[in-house]
Length: 143
Image 1 (spheres, rainbow, N blue to C red):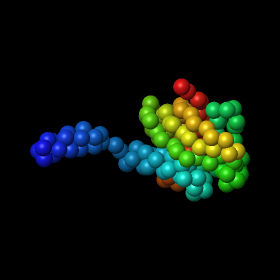
Image 2: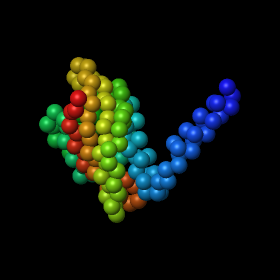
Image 3: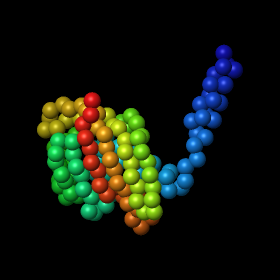
């Protein structure tokens, strides 16, 4: 049994970590992961991940800039309980820009009403002063 466990661990290690990502890609993956974590924890440090001229297109039709998002986020208008990426559809980097398409499952409260949805998200990231910043994000509800 012990050797079976060792074999399974080895296979998972080799296939799970054999993908070689560039330093740029790893830095961007880190920012994406941080974005989801800070959103799920309703942490205002999320604002540090955004470009000053960010644009959000929400699945309900809202369009927000940096200031709009900051006001709503800090007021608790929307409180996230869970933000989980379920699928990475596309990941492209070209110079200082990155295009990320992914599927996320989101749960939370909007004005104290429970919501749960699956979203298709397109994120555009820009590298500013050596750091990846979210520049634009558009989401659409899917089932």
